[in-house]
Length: 464
Image (cartoon, rainbow, N blue to C red; front, side, top):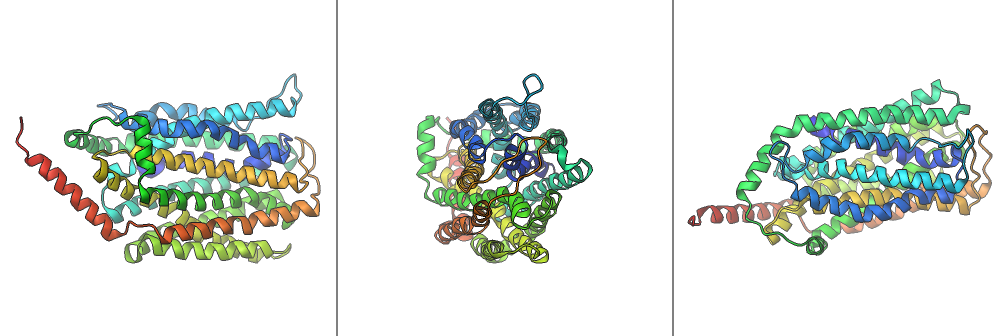
């Protein structure tokens, strides 16, 4: 439970960014859609550097009291919560909105710093997974709990958004998002401290064993990156995760526009649709976790993705007034989304053990650094593509306090393309990569057997 709580805060913070930031920037801060979509993409240029670096630093961290990973969560929780909140403020100069370029600069700087602290707390957290259990199926179960909290946090943030949108008039959109950000940031900070205190004992047991078994020599930073990228199964996991997560981000960022501009509903109808997706994903996590023990990770991924592709195609053809069908398709999408959360992350520990067999080192931080980087890159690229597409199609932004404009037919068609064909192509690419992924349950068992044999051989060597 405590381990799962570690993903509650980052999930809530990331969730409101995924679902609402593009809408916030265009309809509250008044930034054109193309520039709004570029804000997170620009901040990811720095993330491309800091994610793997933080991963390596966590591998090298030494603390008898907290281990390798937990000090990062302990000291990063407060600044993470603070910058998560600052991202939803519309700064003013003398009571007036500054120029678009000053607003753009503010959100890029705050977003970049905020993403650094997201890395500081989330990357060490994700790297803890293989340190808590080495069992092939138990890792899938552990990730089920993790993503239960992750999706549960997403649902909680949507419930809060629904309550806030209903209680605060739509004319006060700026206040709506400010209250939502304040609540989610506070919950995020407290949840991270729960994770630190609740997992400390188990993490220190593994750390003591790792130090006792370790006979590794230091590998230079650039060589570590080359070794990681030279791990063939890891390249498959990278591709699978990037494709599935890109589909998640594009769909999530366009749904608020789809509900309002295509289905012609109120903004308060957006959270229930999103809850339909996330609620289904939450329930299906445990179903897929059970089925993966019977049929394996590949089969589960194929089943979930197939339903998701059907849902995306259905959304493309959906017409105003087909509200019931919209919710059915949202539930179908949620069935697939849960496998996008579960399967790639449960593959990573297997890849890490293959790397340990090949190099003699456990380098969780390096591999999870690349995964967190891809998660953020998928988010940034998704928002950038959606924003650029909307602006190219003539989407009309609105400033704070102004009514939402009626969108032209070209913008509505661009929203349809973003909800259907774009994520579908990404999902199909992910299915192709999953088909060729080389580590099965039997291959993983062989890897663990060879690692045990190596450790026994090392233990039996005469001491000098």
